[in-house]
Image (tube, rainbow, N blue to C red):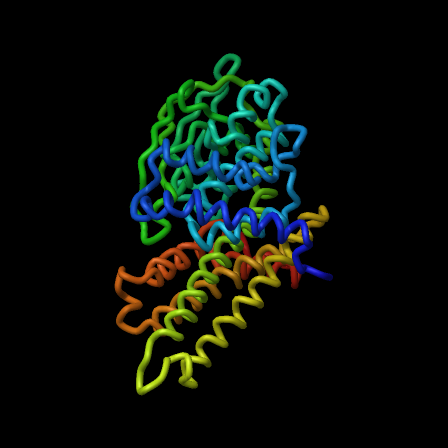
Length: 381
């Protein structure tokens, strides 16, 4: 299998890189330490969507860029070198748009999809709860039938894009053994959100959503009632791949910064890049990054060709995020005292990378997924 980018993919990435450097990175740098204000998020998404980042998975017939997953992954990786926060916002918004495109009624798609693929509307998906993390089957948010709709009561936690979302796709329990997806409109349904302070990726909003007693018409159901868990689990495979592309971008940025610094910093009469131990560190970093990239590209290639890749996506997510944590940690070490200073970018790269071993299946959860596919036995309850 050949995962080398095609000429078209190279041209797309090169054009995207120039646009990011010129039009996106300067704005993103001004908002690295706090969640994007809503208007800034819309502006950045609109700029990104012109290149298929934030709408690439949606077919052209429905207003998206219609990119294959590998081409899209290359663009996300490049963006994450400059702004992993925006890459995260775009990835979550794009996932919500794809769910609407695939499972929404014609009326819902006509009403909301044009805004979601243009950046005028921002979407997100709400699954986790205060007591529910990796076990989506344990969701306690309830949707109780009330006339021609449902009353939704519950609380969602760790929801990316929550504070800036116009639309949220909520997984709720509609019967004893069934979960259903609902599309909620902030203006119409009035859900409330609260930002959660965190270690890294501070410009990428993360919050909780309060659903005290919201009436939602049955026309806002996505897919079949009671089949929401199936649709949710299908999205995890894709999400693990795209978290991995963000990890690749962060790791590459830390690698680039380390090579530059090692060439400039002189100790004991020569650049530290000429010392054996520094070269050994750089070699380990580069090797882990190359291996992570191959795993991620393989999973993206499989998805692009319509193949299931639960194991490959779990391997990519496990290895790429752990590799990014290792690479960014080594980058701090190479920078010495400057590495822990905010005057250099590597401390931010480390905090950002550390965040990615948690969402869409922790490293430990992905190990269990890999083990299940290898043995045929589930370690889950």
